[in-house]
Length: 475
Image (tube, rainbow, N blue to C red; front, side, top):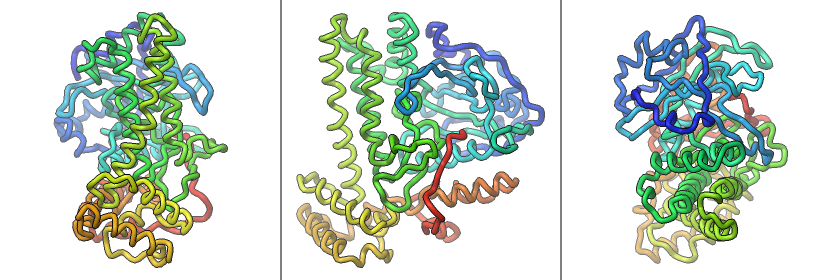
């Protein structure tokens, strides 16, 4: 890690130095060798005893930051002061992929723990590893998991669990909630310092723009629109889109009550605590806009000294979101249907297919995959689908794209394998019993989602589950 930690250049209100919480008997559970290679990290050094002690939070190099970051946020619509209650930013490093944060998750109490133990269990940390690898392989910007260390100590929840610490890699851990913290609890110059830091780190070409803060907001709007559109295109439900879980970089972060849909239903909710469907699949685009509005509120003093003019400027940028989302969503959905040329009828064609899928309770992933293969599905035998299929074929003919060419391109866009809930939970069950084979097999399959090895064919089949799948905020 670098000697100079850039986050420490911010005013001291944005972090608190945390003491280490050593664990008694750490051991490596997972080392993400492909990620290490992508980042240019020596895998042999990563596997060393020295690295193990650092990633267990037992000791730190002299250059380590060892800080808990301050932030606030709207959680299910309610504003509260937060901060890293069980995470420790230990540093940053220039990698093949640019500057990256390295953070320990589950490393023990911090000044923001609010009475919690600051720990995490093996299951939720493995879940974050699995889901983030799945998203990455689907070309969706996401934080990643470099390693998971088993602490050798118990974690007490509803039952006694094995403790674990995850090393998260991110372009940064700046959140909408970081800006909310600055606006509500800091001086205006602190807010300006944060915005300038975010611009320099993520949008350096804006540094000399006339109104760089308005342009910064516009860039975040477009990155979030593109991110959420990509979730919708693969049937991913994040589950807890609080403002503290929305990054300025446009990366997906925090994988607690998240899951991929099997049966297509726009009202799908997985989180046990989301009883009103605030973060349901169909509401994710709207919540993205709501979260961006909260970010806009924080930037008003920087955009213009006159409040009315600031509102007018920032509102114009916020108004870009619905159009940007629709553009990114349509662009991705056209590709899922093998369409190469933009035509006005495309939105209706896509909506008609989704309506049929909902009515027929079709599997989201397999339906799109099946359109590009010879896979036989019940939905393909219905009269409604056959009528839609004729319209689709006619649409392809209008742009002179053959069905064979369309299917070939679709197979590169529509995954054959996703992190289906049943198989994720099955892998975690065996992992909690000490058998990581199922996790390794699943992750291996998820890293090549557009091709299917013989040993992974069963992962394409949505299992029959008893009742709706439910996830919990246990990460």
